[in-house]
Length: 80
Ligand SMILES: [Zn+2]
Image (cartoon, rainbow, N blue to C red; front, side):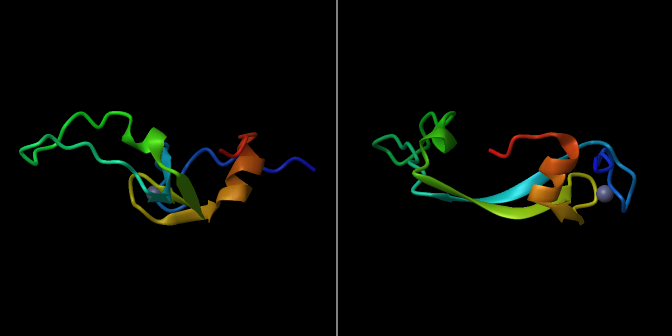
């Protein structure tokens, strides 16, 4: 049985998008010798481990929409 696609927030009807919360482990932060931030554009690519929080939230209202696996199954997304 095909699930119904989740294409908007059930709380505020926004279709802006969603976010998931992730814990990034051992993300290297680049600093200069004077302590100021250096280029960190790819810092998250270098995290040793990413723990995904299994809840999808609305970008507009911030409320929880569904579980991440439900979102992926409904929208034909391959979980990252
Ligand atoms: Zn919303």
